[in-house]
Length: 237
Image 1 (cartoon, rainbow, N blue to C red):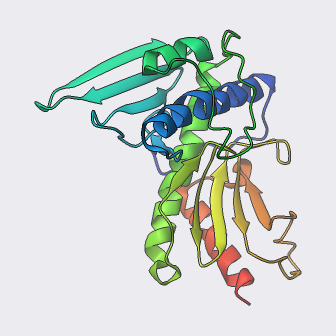
Image 2 (cartoon, rainbow, N blue to C red; image 1 turned 90 degrees about the horizontal axis):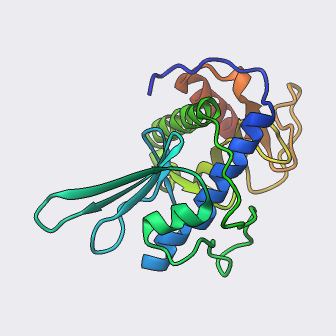
């Protein structure tokens, strides 16, 4: 990923549909596959999108790369098998991963996307690329931020399928990058302190959960880290 990301002023219906489709894949296919195998749901940012960490005896990885689903299985001899197919339906994606049917881990958290196995997944290539670029920037920024605050004991960088955001928690503060949701339609960064934040003259705290900064105001990893840094400073006053 380039350190810089082009500025965007908003999102259209195509972007929103793509985001919803990819979120459904994250919940009902990727997280479902990992949870079925090892009882864990966390995902990671991967080239072209997002995926599972390697899991199971085969060190399987299930990932979204652009508009495709990719399944990689490692062999005991060091070789690996790769299967790839366009994202068409949740049922087809689940079949490629070896799942008997799609369906997120509803016993772990409240699922936020519907599971309609045979509905067409509306994934636009350009929108998928923009989401992947945003995830990559957020992931890079969070890793740089973790290296800057080791005393805060930051968690590992994880893409959580519940809200499809890539995030960490450090010293009771949540930091992350979201592709957008019902509260903020555009992709955004956020800082979420554990208690209602104190007011500031500059209006930094602009949400019930803390503060957010939309992607049109973020041109680089450095911009993102600066936002996280400012949030930490204000939260610790």
